Image 1 (cartoon, rainbow over the protein chains, first blue to last red):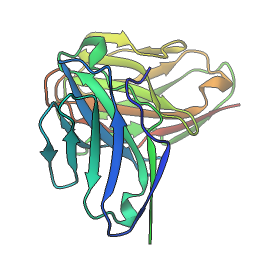
Image 2: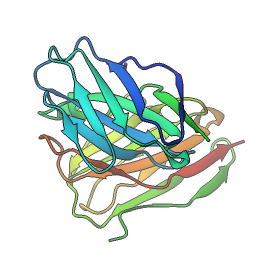
Image 3: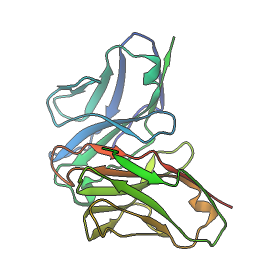
Image 4: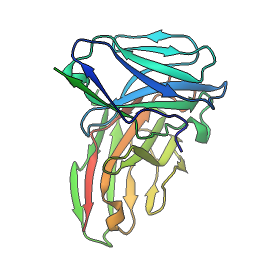
Length: 113
Length: 115
């Protein structure tokens, strides 16, 4: 079973920031938080990952709370092309059976004009 | 690089037929995996491999076999197709099986219908 909880759907206005929350209250010290997205039945696409520090790349920012029990993915200026299902996944650093990506149902983000 | 390629893109099988879904990557990635995705659901892991000659089961392995004789290829075999195996199948690869850099690259998927 997925170790994360996400809202099933969210809306965002085009040009505004999209903030997607994720709860992972049972996360362990070895586990990273990963975000992927899937645009209309294509293969999932990696967005960003982090351990405990906030992370930023050209696609998004990842904010992880100090207790690491939740995180937020931020798309700073959402466009219509960001409409997708976003998956938050925790994954063990050391690999093995706990190192696989286990997908939940994700959050369906709809960006509206 | 072509990345992760999957063939065929679409396939229709009759119940009881067998077939192999092909997956190849040209990035010299150590880790490869197969997922299935049913309508309205997230992806479920079928089998994975942490290197040539090494495979293991994921969440939903029944009815599927895999092998990894080379680093590049990771075929998925359906032994005797059933309607419950109608799904979209995704193959993925990653440079490493462990560590902090675990960006997985996914193929475009194979859409399989079993009648």
